Length: 302
Image (cartoon, rainbow, N blue to C red):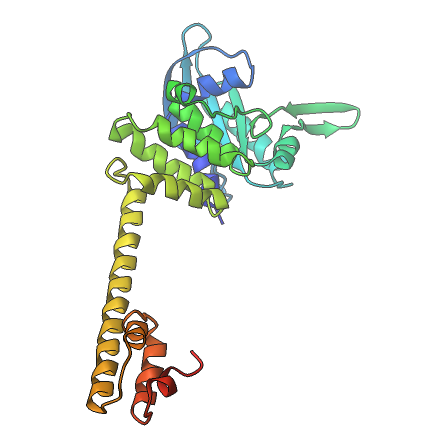
C-alpha cells in the first residue's frame, strides 16, 4: 500500500518542478540548468497486461544541453524488485521518448538510501550489458535547515529536506524553522507546503509536532490540515461542553435530593459536589443519597 510519506517524497517534484535544480546543487551533481519543466504521464504500461508506473515523471528543458527526463521514485524501504523495475523504467522511457533519463530516488532513512545508491547491473559477471546509477536524495545528503532565512530562500527545498529528515532527532527544530519561514508567504504557496509536509511525516511522532505548529496560529494557516485541526477542536469543545453541562445538572440534582431529605451540608461538602466533573462518580453519589443519612456516607471512600 502506498503511504503518505511515499506520496509526498515524489509529489513535491510535481508541485515544484524546478525543485530538482536545487536538489542537484545540494547533491553536488553537475547537470544542465533547467529552463522549463513539464510533468508527464507516469504510466509505463505496455500493450501486454503488465502495469508499471514510475512515481513522478518530468520532462526538463535546458538552455544548451537539450531536454531530459527526470524519473522520481520515493523509496520507503529496501525492495529487491526495484533491481529489475528501475532498469525497465529507464530503458522504456529512453525508448519511448528518445531522451536521456535520470533516475532520482528519495529516501527517509540511511539504510534505504545506502541500498538505493548501489549501482544496478544487468549482464554477466565478465561483461555488464547495462549499469544503472540512481541519484539518491535522503537524510545522508539533504541539508538540515534550521535557519529561517535559508528556508525562505527555497521553501520547496526546505520542505523536501524536512521530509527526508523526518526521523532526525532535531526534526522539531527543522519543522519549527519551516513553519516560521512560511509566516509571510502567501496562502497559495503556504497551503501545499503545509499539506505536503504533513503527508511526508506520515504517522511519525514528528507529524504531531507539525500539527501543533500549524495549530499555533490558525488564522494564518488556511490549508485543509488547519481546517481538520479546527474541526477536531470544535468537536472536542462540543464534547467537553456537553460533559460539563451534564456534570452540573447531576450535581444540582444531588443537592436537591440532600435538601429534600434535610441532610445538612457543610460548605466544603457542597464545594466537593459542585466542582466534580466525573459523571459516573456523581451518579454513584446520587444513588447513595437516596438512602444515606449523612454527607459522610455519600462521599465515603472518595
